[in-house]
Image 1 (cartoon, one colour):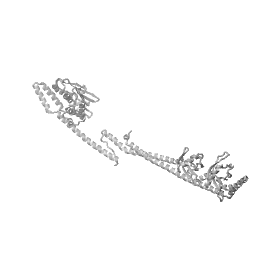
Image 2 (cartoon, rainbow, N blue to C red):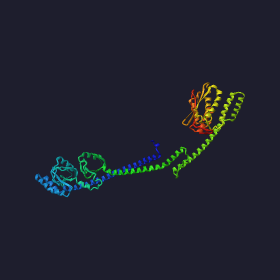
Image 3 (spheres, helix red, strand yellow):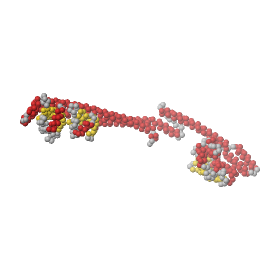
Image 4 (cartoon, rainbow, N blue to C red):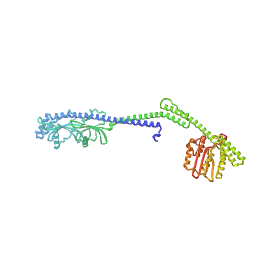
Amino acid sequence: MRWDDLLLKHKMFIAFSVVSLLIVGVTCFIFYKKNENDVKNQTFSLSRVISKQFSEMIDVYFENVEELSVAISIDSTVQSNLLNYYRSDDHIEKEAIGYRLNPILFNFSYPKTYVQGISIHTMDGQIYRYSKVLPPEPIISYSEEELRNLTEAISSNPFVAMPSREKREDGRQPQYIVSFIRKITKIPTQNIIGFVKIDVDVNAFKLVLSNVEANEFENSMYVLIVNDDGQVIFENNHLGFRNSNADLKELLNGIPPEGELRWGNTDYLYTVQKSGYTGWNTIIFIPKDVVMLKVKRFQAIIITVGIVTMLLIAAVSYVLSYHITLPLHRMMKIMSRVEQGDFHQRMEYSGNNEIGRLSRMYNLMLDSISRLINEVYESKLAEKNAQISALQAQINPHFLYNTLNIMKSISRLRGVEEVAEISESLAGLFQYSMKNLHHPVTLAEEIEHVNNYMKIQRHRFGQRLSLKWDIPDRLLKAAVLKLTIQPLVENAVNHGLKRKKTGGKIEIRAAESGGILTVTVKDNGEGMTGAEVARLQRVLDTANTFQDVPEEESRGIGLLNIHQRIQMYFGKSYGLKLFSRPGEGTKVTLNIPFITVKREGRVL
């Protein structure tokens, strides 16, 4: 259905609903996106705080480890035993040094719960070690290459923090540790005579993490400590990072300090914090689904509020449109009754709003229309009576009737019978036409009038002209207006047959069907072209007065006279119709209601 075909209330309802849907939808979308961005920003902010706190606490943690390493490296007993190691060539003596160092290392590590073991390494690969692990782990010496690399590393840096993995031969899970390595220099020459390695259990980092205020995400966030080579130092939950050193190194080189990334099949929000002390990178991963839970709850609230709002707006718009269009529907009903001819209908109104003003204007318009209709009706009625009177005066001259009677009497006295017959027929014509022109007569009376006319015409045309009747007896009492058939015969004689030298025929037929009386006058004269027929029919359908017909068109005046009299008396649906072809003659049909004459001046 087209938009223009919809009812006004439907248009208002659809327009209000669409506009409200657009406004509510855009508003909800803006609120949703803003809330989503706010939640992400809050998450990033919290992640930055957590990663910074965690990194700073790890730094503080390793500062304590560094203090412990400094204390070990400058301890006089450690210094003297290392110097004795290099001076002695006795293998037993070197083993004894380990027994002397063991209680010293025990004293340093025992108060430190996070220390898993301390070992002293000489420059030639000898290891003196104390471990809290029971049973003790087997001692694995560094290779010459590892010692060389380690020596180069600690020569340029005060300490080296490196991840390592302790191997367990008893089938238990390997324990991840972080090794803090510091060089031991001879006092006061500062020559490197060895290095101390302090092994710290990474599980101790969990204690540090538990001190960070992250209750909102502590069950869902992932903390990762990674060095610049992509080696995992610490991982609080297993994400599969520990065996992805190359991927982590590439990741650290290509991502901004915070943002979103996809690892595996999961999307994460992340922040990266690099420690200036250890050089390690603290990365906080928070699953995006966990962050979006709050957004989804807000989304559900927005959708619920939006739906309720739209339903309320739709209901209000429907009620409003209904009450606005209800008076219009009432006016349409009244207008339909007025269209059917009941001009007494009026709008009931109250108030001074637009509908009330429209109702008052509509009522005033109906009053004006009713007044104008009455005025036009009275004017047309007066015009009709004047035309009928003028027509009667035109074709009803009394002096001609009296003169014809005198002519008839003189002709018979002198024996001129032909003149007497013509005078008698012509007198009958005028006598018929001079009285009660506006009253209907029987079809038989009109036929008698036509016969009188034809008697005169036969004296004029002789055997060139013949008249044929085909009228059922039951139709002879049908009511017709005076002078409606005879002028049609006269037109046939004067226009259709005037050039015909012999064999001129006029047929008059009458028939009744469906309450309609049809009288047909047909001649076999020269006929008319289609353009002439169309012009005469247009004159009948459109001309209002005799002045609308050209003076030279006498046939048009006669036909228009009959046509207008029929329509004035019986209505606009009745009148004359023309049919003609060149060389085939002309046929004129007269249609009027089929009614019978009860008595003069009365019809039934």
